[in-house]
Image (spheres, rainbow, N blue to C red):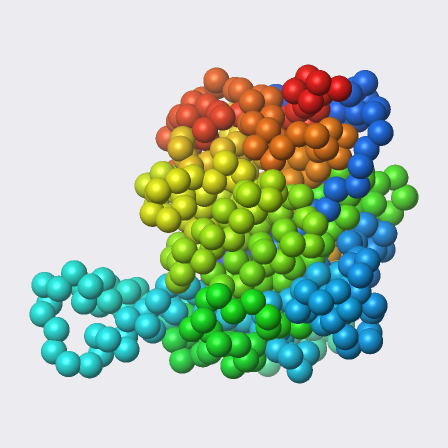
Length: 522
């Protein structure tokens, strides 16, 4: 009976999550109001300041891959003007063969690709184990204590992951049994009410889900797909992300110990799973007013695709090379919707950030989804260079907001009075996904491209501005809200919204372009 109750509880929970009412696809484009805190994109386009001629601006999406063939993106994808597609030659002599749309730093020369990879803390742990698993160590040694703590944490995470994976596989198998019994991949509530198998638990589960489906007017396939995704995610977590024995670098074939190595990878910018990067690209630049899907924020932009993020934590070497590639090939804005709690070689990333700064490129980065204070807990990469010797003036760190003013910061968003610059919509954002699809995603990963899109919209019209000025504009023109909100990561703790970031504000496109016009002197 306990097992049966678990099935019903888990399935109904997923049904309830699926049934949550979706907001308007363009909610974040609207003016900020009590129940819909948008960023005035529509109003921004109506201003006199937006009517000036614009110059195409290149935005690099450094991510896990982007579907360059998507119906709503294919017309806004950057193409290397000096490269001849498919001739297997490095026509522009930049070291990257056939880099027509960008480059993939987590692929092999033979065309293979990294899918899943370790978490950075697992890679750091593996490196530490080479030292601490040999010889005898004093338990009071600080490094040894850290190693033991990480070992315990990783082992506990693996055990938890295996237990969850077993549970979710069992539930998924039960859902498959319902499909088999009804002879349908997406059975109706009526069909499920009549399920009669030899297992009474399956019969009871089918009836329970049928009632929930009927009540909330959603489909069985939604439940199935969510459990299937959970199983895939947990399998990746156990066998790849938390597995110190897995080494994806065999696929890439580079000299991983050499962080200064630049030339490796392949030109497959889509990769095995381009969902995240495609969604990010669409937020920034999906073709506007083409009667397809949705509109991106910026109207005169080209998306350069740089693939460095696996299903796991990105590697510092790849991030650094991704930034340098984007800068060298003409990107003025680089969106980075990724992050992690450990860093393997921060100096190599710091050097790339400083390089972008020297070249006048704006870096826009997602603050992270742990509901943590980034002033107190590390989140990489960041704008602190070389151990705090200096800070990158071209770096914009973005927290995620949602629609309702009283709970404006999302519960998952990282924040920080010193280390998060400004907030931007990152809840239920509708955008492109592979194979001409569209979906709602949550995350600071979505908030970052919203900010990058606003920057591109503004900068394309006032290209005489610098990256540092663009950062100042987005922060200074942001909407300051002195109301108390729930602190991210807590259920009830209240804090003034202005205390959650450096600017204390929510990005506003209309105010940004008006300020840009004044600052540019045009």
